[in-house]
Length: 157
Image 1 (cartoon, one colour):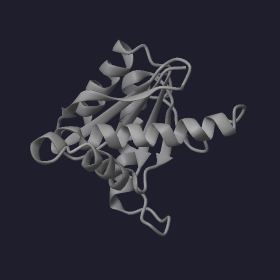
Image 2 (cartoon, rainbow, N blue to C red):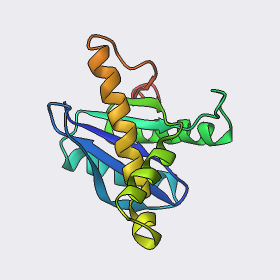
Image 3 (cartoon, one colour):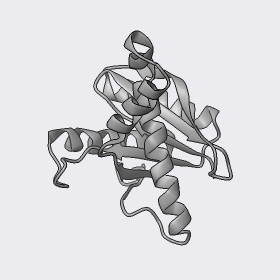
């Protein structure tokens, strides 16, 4: 199944995708540059639809000790808006150290300055997606540990 990974940020949101066989992962550029949570969710949902993805995985920022801070709470609110916008469940996935790994990848490829800034979040999303797909391969019959479902429109009436 095609997956889209999302590295949500206050100003920039990075995306990555994989092929239907869940083997090849690549950053999606350009990154989404949107400060409004609702507009960012809509922009990501548009990419999910355009890529014909069947799944969405969102990086959940945790502290190094595994606890969650204010940023994780904001990401959880974004997850619900994203699930509602794209009509798909959104798997939450621990994103600790993805930005560090992405920065190392970009440094190894001599990508610095403005080029690095333009790609860092999408490369982070690719690192996140690779981790998630490795877990799926090791646990083929299990659903992701934590998923946010789209709100039931009938329940809001």
